[in-house]
Every structure is written in structure tokens, then in C-alpha cells.
Amino acid sequence: SGTTVLQAGQRTGWALQQTDPWADTPPQAWNLKHIQRRAKERERGWRSWSDLHQQYEGPQRALVHTSGLMLQALSYAPSGAIIAAATTSLPEGIGSSRTWDYRYTWVRDASMTMRGLWVAACPDEAARFFAFLARAAATQLDRGVDLQIMFGVGGEHDLTEHEIPHLSGWRHSAPVRTGNAAWNQTQLDVYGALLDAAYVLREHLQPLEPATRHLLVAAVDAAAARWSEDDRGIWEIRGPARPYVHSKLMCWVALDRGIAMADLLQAAENTARWTQTRDEIRRVIVEQAWNPNVGAFTQCLGSDDLDAAALLIALVGLLPPDDPKLALTVDAIAKNLTDTQGLLVRYRADDGLPGDEGSFLLCTFWLAEAQAVIGRVDAAEQTLDRAASYANNLGLFAEQIDSEPEKCPATTPKPSATSASSSPRKPSPPPVTSSARTGDLERRAEYM
Image 1 (cartoon, rainbow, N blue to C red):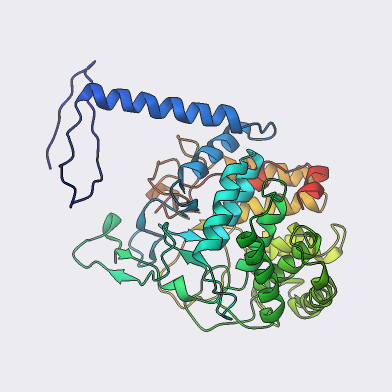
Image 2: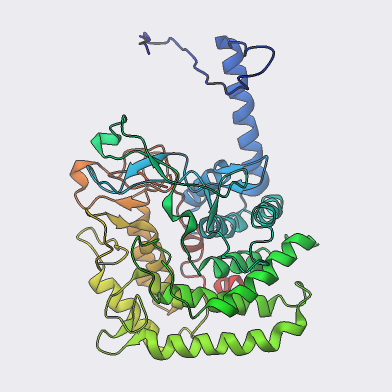
């Protein structure tokens, strides 16, 4: 370690190299001129990518463009993987032990990322991502094994979690972790996230590679076979498996999108069976996820707890936009899951973990999107503007926002990829699906 002191007008450069320790020749140190030249090359490369891909025009244009850059920066070109974050162990609250490692490719998160990049029209990225998943998940579904929810950037399967006790953590928030114990959880929503991304990007995936087609058909079949099982849900609860409504919903999405793409998937013979199961899932959600005492769709079948993930019922097309249960669910979530800053928390139910977390910014974007879908465009724009105001000085968003912002302002830049203001987890882009479509119901219909 050391210190470099610069005077006004002086410049210096710093570069970190990764090299093979068994290489015949050691890495050569770069001088300042070399560093500056390479930095200029990288800048030209990013500007060229942005000029080619970023065609979005609409609400929050600058933030959406920043999102596209961040999403692209989290991709790993050699394999096509897209990681959820560039860092590990940044806590959900100062001093919290909720310190997770997100330097991996989540099937769900990466699928949502591909939907975001769809706004920027990036066909090459889409094809590489689906090819990566087809390689990483090869034979899993054929063998009746769960589709693993996350992989290393090289397709690694074993992501066993370890603690590093000699590191104190950010602001003494320990433990520092490498690996993630959720890697072998059952999370049934991954099938819907995967098929929804493929549906949105279907024009960019043609001609469909045989391995990708096989993966997608197997994913639809897995959703059809397993939708009624309990799992750990979208929030990766480290407790017993439960009948999470969001997981059932996304299995419905997997079947619905699979039916819509049956010709592309060369699976027309499966549509009758898939349709029957899709309709059964819808019936169960409408009858058992709706709680008349709460006046909303709830977190689990038969439960009283609210969950912001229920907002996706309005977004995926399960019910028509004018169904009164959608409006009631949106109202109940907005009333009961909103914090003092006007942002949504994910849920208030006990998740079995010590400590608290901040509001979850993605959920507030979901709220804006749901309000737009049910026709409350003015409210949606207000919600969107409120969420967008939490961008930091780099135009990035935290995954979570501290409920006590004076402890760690939301505008403080954090080196992560959708992170909390008090503690960044995963620099996140603004959810492009929300900001790009608020008030744009016709385009939403096309998107769905």
C-alpha cells in the first residue's frame, strides 16, 4: 500500500493486471502513457457500443441509457454470462450480517437483464446469454434435476458459501462471504423468467440454436411438472420451503410463453398439455392466492402476508388490467409496504434472518409499472419520478435504500450492481422495463 499526492493540474494513472501465474513471461508494467492510451480506447469502445445500441426515447431517457451501459458492463464476453453484481458482502444495513456474494449469474436476474437490454436492441448479447445457459444447464432438466438458479461466469455449478473471518467487512458489517448458499435452492420462478426473456427476445434468437430450443422446451415441461411444489421463492428465503405465489405465477408465465412460442420451439404437439396446466395454475392463483380479509393477492397460498412480488400479477398478463383484484392488490401493497420515504419494502413477514433491510427500489418501479397497467397513469408517473430521484451522482440505483438516509445518503456512489444506499448489493440500472413503459400501455401489450 502507499499514498500518491497530486498537485493541481497533475495526472497519474493506475492499472491492475490479471495474469497466469504459470506464464513463461511475467506481466509488463504499464507506464502512464500506455494507461492513458488504453483508457481512451475503452472510452471509444463504450461510446461506439452506446451509439449502436441505445435507441430508446421516452421517460427518464438518460437514466435508461445509463442502465444499458451498466447492464452491458456486467456481462462476461468470453462465455456470455451476465453477473448480478461486481462485488461481494456489501450489507443490507450498516452492521447487518445480511452480507451476500452476488458475483454470479442468476438465471432470473440475467433474464431480467436481457429484457432490459431488449430496449437497447442487443441481439448478439441475447444469443450469447441463452447459449451460455444451454451449456451451463446441459442435461440438468433431462435428468429431472432442478434448473440451478445461478452459475459462475464460466458455467461453474458448485458455488458453496464460505466466510472470510479475517476481513471486517464494509463498515464492520460481517461476515465477508465468498460463494452463495442459495445456489442449490429450489426456486421455481426461474422457468418463467427464462421463458419470458426468450419470448421478448424471440426475434433476436432466430434461427434458434438446437441446444437453446431444447433448454426452453425442457424448462416449460419442468414448470408444468413442478408448479405445485413448495420452494424458497424469489427472495431466496433461508427457511422452510413454502407455496410462494410469485413462483406459481412464473410457472404460469413459462407455460404461457411456451405456448406462444410453440412453433418456434418446434413443440406444437405439447400445446394442449401445456394449456391445460397453464389454466389450472391460473385457477389456483385466483382462488387460493386471493385473501378477501387482506383484500389482496398475498405472499403464499392461504397466507395473510403481503409481498411486493404480487405486483407482477398485473405485469405478466394473468388477469385483464381492469380486474378489480389487481387494483385492490396494488392499493394494499402501496398502503402497507411503503416506508417513510415513499418507497416499497419487499415484505414485512419474518424471514428468519437477524437485522433489518432497507426499502427495495426495484419494487417501487414495479409499483409504477402496475399502476400504469391498471390505468392510473398519473400515479404511475409520480411513483416513477419518486423512485428515479434516488439515482446517485453517476445515474446508478441502489438495490436497497436505507430507511435512515442520513446514515448513508442514497446519492453516495457504491461499487456494486444493484445495491443498497446504506450498503450496495447488486450498481443497479433503473429497471428499464418500468421506466421505459410507464404510461405506454400499447407498447406494454406488445412487450407482453
